[in-house]
Length: 363
Image (cartoon, rainbow, N blue to C red; front, side, top):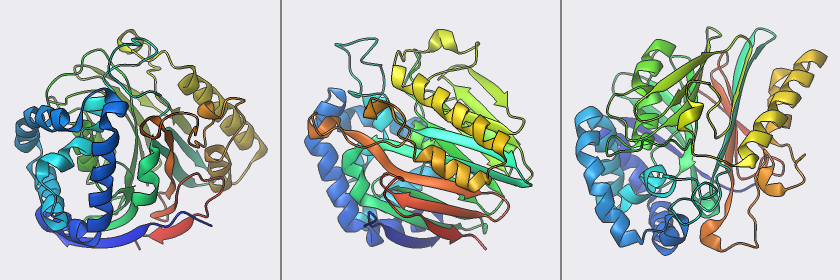
C-alpha cells in the first residue's frame, strides 16, 4: 500500500496561502512539531527549547529579504494554532542540524547521517525532466502534503513537502522546476535560512530569476540547487554562504550532497562516502539508460528506486535504519519526477521502490 498524503489547494497572498495550508494540515503540523520537539536533541545536539531561541536570530534577515515567505510561515502558524517560534525550528532544520558533518567532526553538532537527497535532470527525446528523492527525517514520511498553490499574480506551484515545512522543491506554471540538496560548507552564518530561499525559488519566472534568488547575498548557509526549465535549460548552483559555483548541463545533470565543482571543494565539510557512491551510481545508470535510448521518465524512475548499494544507507532509494534511535533515522520521505513540457509531477510519499506514483498537472 502507498504511504498516504494530504492534497491541499491554497491561493491568494502569501499569508492567506499559509493560513489555508495551516488550517487544512493542522493535525499533521501539530504532530510534526511534536516529533521535532521529542527528537531534536538527537538530530542535532540542541534541545528543542534552545533551538527555538536560536531561530530568532534568523527571523529579522529573513523578514527583510523575503517578507512574503515569512508571511506564509506566519499564516501557517496561525492556521495550525502553533506558535511561530515552534514552527521555525523544523524550517531551520539545516541551520540547526546540518552545520557540520559528524564524519569530519564526531563530537560536533549535526545529523547522525549525511545521506540527504539525490537529484537527476535529463533532456532527451524532446523532453526535459527533473527527478528528486527527498531524504530527511523518517518521522516526516507520514506527514507529507501535496500543495497546489496559486499566488496573487497567478503563478501556480505544485510541491510536496512535510506539512510543517515550507515547500523546498517543485514545479511552477512559468516552466521552472527546482530540486535542493543539502551541502555542508565551512562558512555558515546568521542570515536567511535555506528553506526560506528554496520556497522563494518556486516562484522563479526563468532560470536567470532562479539564479538570482538562489544567490541571495544574505543567505545563512549553502545548498545545492538544480534547475530545469521548459526551454530545455539545465543549471546547477553549488552555494556556500559566501561564495558559489554554477554548472550548466548539456543533456544531463546529477547531484547529491557534496560539492563537485573544483572552486567549491575546499569548502566541503562532508566526508560521507554515501553521497559520493550515490552520485557515481546515478551517473552510471543515467549514462547506460541514455545510451540504450530508454524513455527518460522510466529511466528517472528506475534511478530513484535503485538499491544497488550493499549498504542500504548508501542506496539512492532510502529506507530507515531500524537499528539506530528514531531521532537519527533518515529515509526517502518523498520522490518526484517533474516533466517541464507537460507541467506535471509524478509523486509518491515514502520510498519510490514500493509506493505508487500519482500524476498531478498544472494544466
